[in-house]
Image 1 (cartoon, one colour):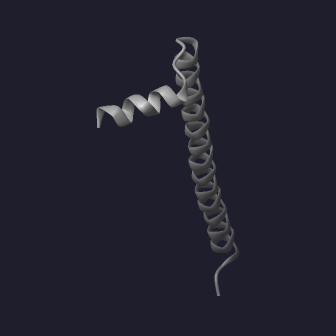
Image 2 (cartoon, one colour):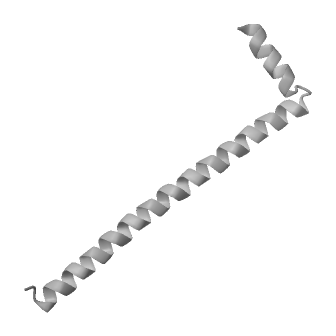
Image 3 (tube, rainbow, N blue to C red):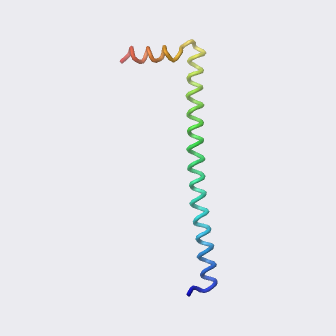
Length: 68
């Protein structure tokens, strides 16, 4: 049978390990959402720049297929 100190120590260590794992998962999810939001914003910005220049999506598709 474990002593009371050993039981308290293992409980504390398990709480710390679980907190560490949960923290890493939260960071991974947070960064993946951030990357998705940033890439969507960059894509929208690029489309807006082309729109401001008077180049629509159809023009871009036509130019890309013409070059192939």
